[in-house]
Image (cartoon, rainbow, N blue to C red; front, side, top):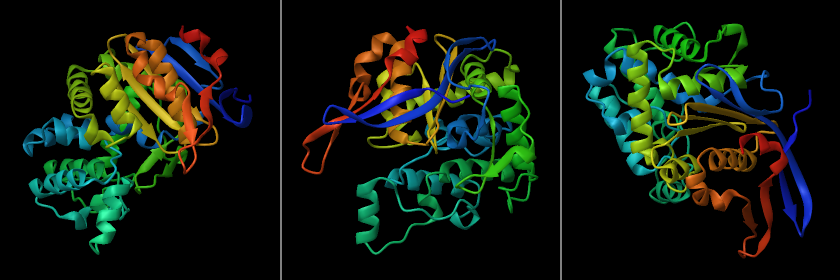
Length: 335
């Protein structure tokens, strides 16, 4: 089954590029409210499921043991831009666990936030694992290891006790198995598991509402949701779509991107979860699709998504050259 065209890119009034993909909106009982494309295809959600991966940090008591508040819980589910405050908070999280950045196995990465990257380079610095966009998630997992008395060495390996807790949380929330044979290695060296988009959307509906989860897991999910929506800057950073969309929605949704054109979101007020995948992995297209879905599901906030509906393209002299916009017919089921 070939996925439909969801997004077109224009130049000079002509279509220059097209992006195919799939999306699904589910309620907490698993019923699909709207969809397009093959939503049963197994995709690697990558960083889009960081909120679910952070559940053991709260459930084991490690977050409380080390005094992690909402900002730390937001960073534990972040793909941050490596801005100074992101780096400082990740370092502080490790400090509280008695660890240093040497314990991080996510690898060094230049900040994606351009100003922070230029400042680091100009000062003669080099990127460290703390600058990695996943350093908060890794710091949280190390806190689980230390707090539970596990050896933190090798915490990224699929058979490490921390990863077994993470996999159980992913399976418990999405309702589908995450077998190792359907896994790959993420950019930060953690396991990532291919699962259907439908299961991801269902899982995020359950995560947002607590429906079908144990009281302890529902409370942990609520804490992580509140942390992300209260501190969206820590989840991504300056000028980033996840941060801007959560700010625009005023706490109504947790929105999280993953590499290669994936997005997930939880909207507890309306009891829905969203999952999408752009086939060619283009971020410009995945942001356009998520903006369209959110604007239609939360119409009172639609004006805030106007910059992406469609997004104007400009050249280096800031001359308008075209637009990135969705094919509206693909989204009629959301109206």
